[in-house]
Length: 305
Image (tube, rainbow, N blue to C red):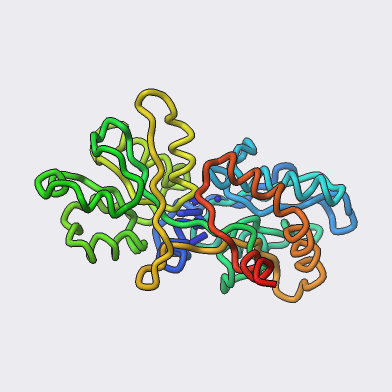
């Protein structure tokens, strides 16, 4: 899921993830009614995992099951002896209201029971233990001729004339804005709105299109988005991911958890237990999407015991 405010990261959990996870900004949207694919199962249909998701928010999720949140949902369902059914709705204003909190008009059963990716501590849902901690990153096409960038600081070491000629794509109200301000580069920013207002658009699309067209030289985006774009550009013109490090002054890193309804403590505990006992499986999925990963707070506590 960007992709609510990591992300579509930036996910969009990460479009919401920027600036406290770019969490749900107001934007005019062409809201479309929630659709289930297939229709949500009644509560007594215990073999169904009902997932709330965005149908077009790669790398997080899409209606074809190609996002890492789709893969996590499939793994979770398999281990719980269930099959996945989705209620799709664009991750814009009203996402939680139209999915996790919405009931089927006829059966009065909730349409879906879990959002696979929300920021830890998200105020609109109860959240599980985090299963992922990622960080903002630069995505740099080889053709940008910026030399070898191993860290963001390497960019700052470029000759002044080169640095001042760059166009750097960032999304509004995200940590990269502060970084560019801090380093006197805000005038080099190509600023994108955190939400386009079009549910058929997502951040990875926007950045990929403008990087390919040469409208920007590099971009600073939520880590899953950077990894997704690099995965799509592996040839001679490969795109490189350059992650930021956690910074006490700028909040580059965020933990991602699963979201459930408040008061459903038993269900949340089931998910907590699955996350805790399937860390390697989860990591394998995330690594396959080239997501830059950091230790979660749960992993840090475990390693200190």
